[in-house]
Image (cartoon, rainbow, N blue to C red; front, side, top):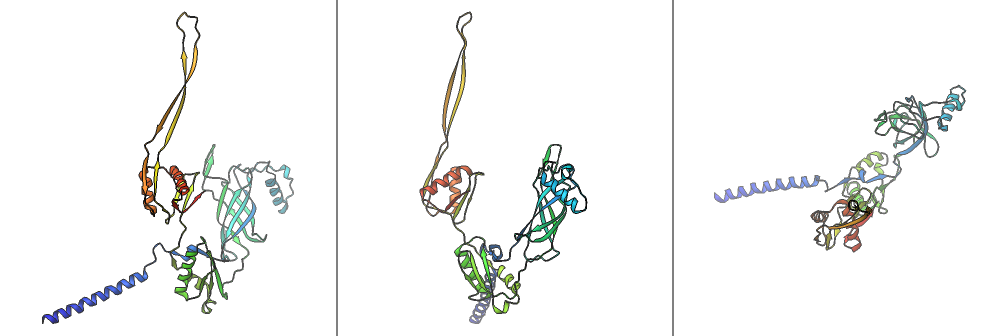
Length: 375
């Protein structure tokens, strides 16, 4: 009887362990890689990109804050516009303080169709004081080939205010949401393609290999092949060539852990220091202390005695004081991680600007196993 009870208990325990093992396998199978990034955030597909548009236009309806009469191109533009409307005027007689010349720019997204709306930005190129309250007149937007791809027009929005000698925010750059209408499409065909080219935003051989392995694991072996550190060639399977958009969506949603070069970026203008994850330091000892020298000049006036024939004498005296802060010596062991390095430097009590000098000295000593970039 006791043996039967032990056998049933053993079978029950075995079933529980099998269930837990199955649930664990399902959990880890669906678990994303640590610090995983989607392929769409790491790379772009060659040929699928926005296109820059530019045009010259006029903003009217300003409250006396437009270009002055000395802006010849603004007056010429007004005269040309009025002549186009059948009104003959002399540009020398124009004094339009309510108008301003602007450069209009926009980004036309890929696959934008005729009639779709895109945002535009109008920037003053004259001596206008403000574009607040103005309206952009019809402005053709040209591509790099000189062809017109969109037409912009409409009231502008600044998000700032000015008056009485006080200015809030920038008043010479305005935005029009959906202010341009696409008039010409940029031809780009996907279906029927046999291959695609993927370009990494940050070229790296390891990341390139990882992206290709992720694609081949899901789509099929041999589909993705790294060409170099920043380019991958994708062979589209014959079954997906008639629906390339769905194939691209499957690829760009894959998760990949990107690799990165060990780098320390220093901005001396702002005192900003950015330390990469893979930065390590060989065994070193750091001593840091500030030496402050203060020089102060003062004048000493010597007055003669009463009823004496002496003269007042003025002499200068220079006081020199030297103050050296107590320095601390910190030993940083070899192969220190970024966390250990930061804790050690914080223990010394350095400021960000002092940290710049320390990293330069560590790099000069050969102990910094990372690239030091100063911008």
